[in-house]
Image (cartoon, rainbow, N blue to C red; front, side):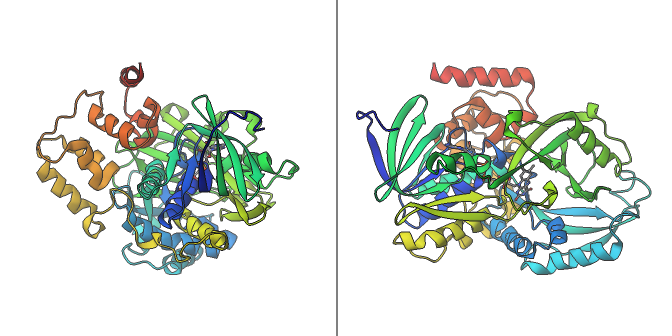
Amino acid sequence: MFENENERIMADYDLLIIGGGINGTAIARDAAGRGLKVLLCERDDLANHTSSSSTKLIHGGLRYLEYYEFKLVRHALIEREVLLRAAPHIIWPMRFVLPYDKGLRPKWMLRAGLFLYDSLGGREKLPGTKTVKLNKPPHQGVLESRLTQGFEYSDCWVEDARLVVLNALDAANRGADIRTRTEVLSIEADGSGYKAEIKTNGTTATVTAKGCINSAGPWVDEVLKKIQRTKNDKSVRLVKGSHIVTKRLFEGDHAYIFQNADNRIIFAIPYERDYTLIGTTDKPYDPSEGKVKISQEEIDYLCGAASEYFENDITPEDVTWTYSGVRPLYDDKSEDASAVTRDYVLELDEFTKDAPFMSIYGGKITTSRKLAEHVMEQLHPFYDYKKKGWTETAGLPGGDIADADFDAFYEKMRKRYRAMEAKVLLRLCHGYGTRVTLILGDGDTAPELGQHFGQGLYEAEARYLINHEWATSADDIIWRRTKLGVHLSTSEKDAFTEWFNSLNS
Ligand SMILES: Cc1cc2nc3c(=O)[nH]c(=O)nc-3n(C[C@H](O)[C@H](O)[C@H](O)COP(=O)(O)OP(=O)(O)OC[C@H]3O[C@@H](n4cnc5c(N)ncnc54)[C@H](O)[C@@H]3O)c2cc1C
């Protein structure tokens, strides 16, 4: 494997992390903050896969109560306010309206479930559950007239791909080496640690590390097989989830959660100001299907499920965009894909004595910080660092907003950059928090932002993303660092891509 004697050993690390999704970057952040020398390799872009394809909720997961996943729900509920404090620009509270529908779960059950949900995880800022009348504005005329009563409860929204990047940024600020477009080709146990061959843009190199984290998401078993070649059994259960996006279906900042006759639930959530996000499905996924994408059956299912509740039917013609992701769940042998545990499982191997190799299964965006903390607790015997966690009270880059009060912060920015279009400024403040000054500069009320590519995307933002946030392609910017891809026309996207590519020529 490492026959080429001329290959250079680039560096020796304490920890090599494979995969730059939410789990890999959260672990990189925690480990770097404890003083470990960390290398994170992501073969595509940060959050290129599952971590940008979620429903984007920081939530306890109301429906997991039905599977008695009380520990998962409790941990996740507690994380809501921890993450809200850490990054109030990309995470915000959201109210969810759950209609009561005759013939489905009875009212007492919904009430009991929501009571448990309100009480399980310490809630300080988020308001509790209340009953709502659905035959009154803003629900009247939006929902079917048979729906007259429901409940309203709290969870949070997160810009998922940005949370990944903020973890990576914080890790890098604490000394981690973050490399995107860098694939780990092979790994082998090597005396007192591991030796890996990595490839960036066609150039291979060799690195060594005392320990390894396999946070390759859907590819976790594939990476494990690189070192444990005899491994044949599958530990990961791949479950596809898809979303559809339509033009905005209702006014207001609240979301809806609908129960389906098949016992599943789906969400309808305000998305990117002008749209509604509807999801998700739960379908077994076989990698031989190739690129993960929504099927016609899933589109029909989501349109049908939403039409059961919305006054105006939603048809496939209303769908303006879709996305799909694969949940890398731990295979607990459940028959039903919806019933497979969403909790994470950490599998620790020592392929060479005293050198940890940990594989991560499952997990949620919501529990990623906690997962990283658990990983570091388990790795403690192998390293010399403080066992106590530090991330619970630490902010993420741009999240140092006074009292985590985003509205007050935005008002301050409005006064400062008076001449800027409010819509553009609001998006930038949400995206970058206090780091927005790195794009807008310190002084002018009407900053010089360079070329405009449409929909408020200016050269200044693109250059910031290239220089500070590992953006190396136009798609990194329009689909992950921002979601402007949803708004830009085809010709605007083409013009931006042309500009981006011209930077390297
Ligand atoms: C449809 C759907 C909805 C969801 N909704 C929610 C939600 O609302 N809230 C919530 O909390 N959670 C949600 N989740 C769960 C959450 O999104 C996932 O648990 C999480 O994103 C998994 O992150 P990850 O880091 O394990 O995997 P990924 O994000 O897939 O990252 C793994 C990375 O490893 C890289 N990689 C693989 N092999 C190599 C290699 N050899 N070398 C280098 N890099 C490699 C890949 O390129 C990939 O980027 C949802 C998931 C899905 C699918």
